[in-house]
Image (tube, rainbow, N blue to C red; front, side):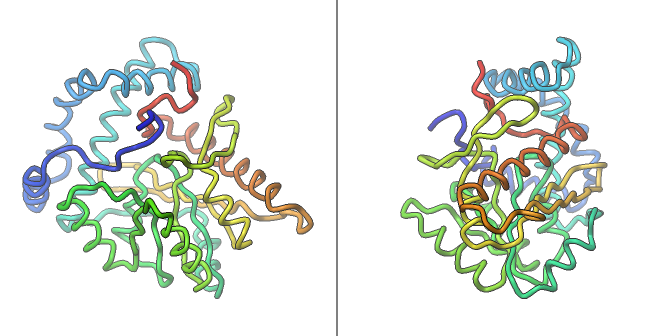
Length: 295
């Protein structure tokens, strides 16, 4: 498996996951954050390629100095750990505040009969909106199928209560037909475009001033169905608080353009919106590999 392909699993054993859920039913998340912080340096040293990739992200894409890049790399790993804790806290029944920017845009899309696409990225905590908010339209979220049984069961149970269906990636590509049907039925399709699947087709974009490959599939599906497309980034803003940033990508697209041109334009707008989020929340980039192909 290449550096750009993720296993789709949460670290730890099933009994550790169950224990963490049990602890979070009675212990405040801030307490768990505190003790988790001591493990971050060890975690980083155990995965040198991962932390070096994030260090390069801060040095090369944000232009930080050496010391600031090392500090930012530690902060990035700390925030990632807190976000993982937040997921288990949601399983334990903890309630988070989730504010939605551009709420009118999203509510108008929910009122329409047509389905639409939400294209996200591995920034912030994409799952939190599914745990805390219930959509009147069913959300179909594409996921890797490699999660542990404990985490997968908790996800299905918690998200299912809020009208979210998880669609695992299948080797026979049947998940594509499921997503296509969901859009035809007026539902929402949620896909991340910043992490590549095995043998996936890619599209080249500029992100933070450097070209990189992203997943072509979401933009191909959107162009084929000609449905509304939004970016949705759920960013952590406090111990129990998140903010959803939503932007529409398909506004003012000329009608008489080819499907390929439409794909390219949607991908370009996606990368622009992702770049804006990364400038606002630089420490919440969670692609722990050399995303831009640099070593």
